[in-house]
Image (cartoon, rainbow over the protein chains, first blue to last red):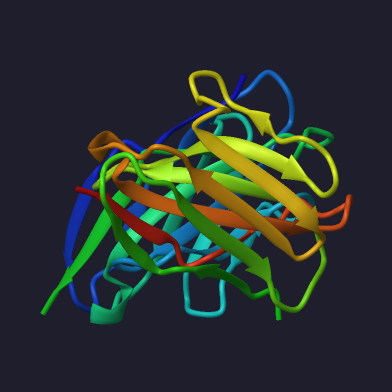
Length: 114
Length: 116
């Protein structure tokens, strides 16, 4: 079975500051990795994903995440955050060849302060 | 593209009644749909996986007779909460996955269920 740990439940940060949201996973097999963002009272939106290839993946709104196999991590980073980035962020894993089920972490609430 | 809708977006019902929630993939065919439940300030918990034309696979601890899932077409899945009770109040989110080779899931906006 797989598990996902998001170490920080809440991350407050000032606008234009850098941020890192941590995600570690546990799995005995290779996994696909995802970051989803959830705005209040909305469903989840895919932010970025790692399936294979380059270990650094980027989103269109400035976020990036790096897959580190040795540390079993997939931390999410942004060099300069905006007020509009305030949301809940979920890290998730899926096992290739499985029924495409996602296992989610507990989420990190990112709050960008003016 | 890859839009998933849910209806209704919120519903209030009385204890003992049943509520149906629809999940539709608007611009793609979803061979697999998933139903999640999310409590306030918590993560998503997978309730069941449904493939078009076959019975849903429920996660451990989820009552299949209480949470009826029907995936009658490649664009529609429904979740019926039967004999709802206040403890069933939650945010229900569906997702849809296109094709057998895709590992992406596209999420609906969620349905807020309140049972009084």
